[in-house]
Image 1 (tube, rainbow, N blue to C red):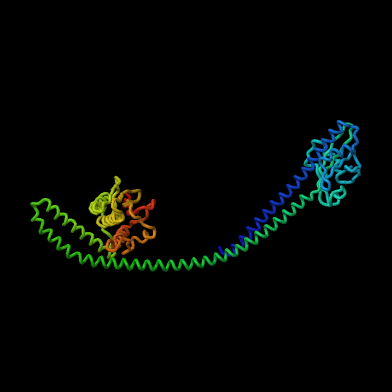
Image 2 (image 1 turned 135 degrees about the vertical axis):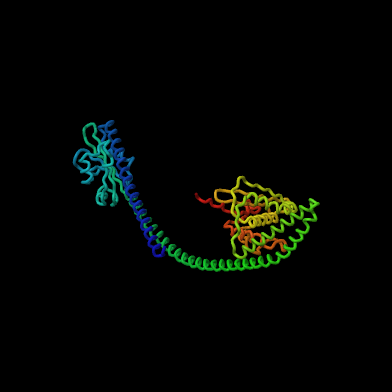
Length: 453
């Protein structure tokens, strides 16, 4: 959102909130005034009941004495006064005995709406400054609560309780002023902080843009570095493959010469056959690596994942036994077949298992599980070794990156596994375990799609 639109939105929000607050305060003031009027009406009704009771008990008592005694409980000098009017016409009589004229109050009493038990909501008047002063109250707005009764002699008594609303008005005015000041102050603060925030946001956006550019440059340099390492790895793989080809040919020839000579010795025969099989396996792996280095696609076969897992375990069992690391294998059944180059995927699994073995101290354990879901088959290797940090895990598949001591690792095992899995459109994941001890590595290969009929 543009800064100008943000300022407009903030201003609109301030106006809306201020208007809502002022309207709410106005309603509170009106409710307070209505409560004050109800209070005076209730006092007038109470005074009417008290005078009616007193006139019933002592009908000959002077009216002024009765008024003074009853009014003493409600009058407040300078704030609230009590008046009566006996019969129709004439003015009001206060507790001082003097007559007071108030045309509006007298007219309201003449309408006789204020008998005891009448709807009190209609029995009050708001008096002007002049009317308040005529009654002996401060020249401020006042409220007159009205009531009345008829005594035993049939005379109609009008009861008036007039009270100044000065304290309520002053309190309401102060509340209005406080509200306006709060709105203005808060509006100023919001606009000031909004302007400051916009300036800060602009600087942050500029900084984020600079950081994004720097991050893009860094990622580009890292990709170029990885590409250079992969090119170096490809060149090395090609050269090593050519150099290994000649010794392998010699080994294969010697094995073929030995086979007839050990035909009578079963143990020696098995050893020679094993050498021949492993020589053939090395040749297959070398050819497959050469294909990957040249950018070719792997030769895919439909293979049982459990068979791949057992073959990989068979190749590394001696390393686990030598390192005193326990290897637990769990292969779910049944498992769907996957389309892969079995020699390459087997080698990738071997690399994960050997990495887990090296990470465990003597007496540690590695759990190797093969499982599947609706879309893929997962080879999961979990160890309880020294563990791995997220920073190291993010670089674990980089060529030549290793945390092993010098002479114990080349930094190529996981890089090769990553390339193998990537060429099979799979996912290689290396993460710290949730309990902060050990590492969790997995190879996820998608199941081949079944052709629709």
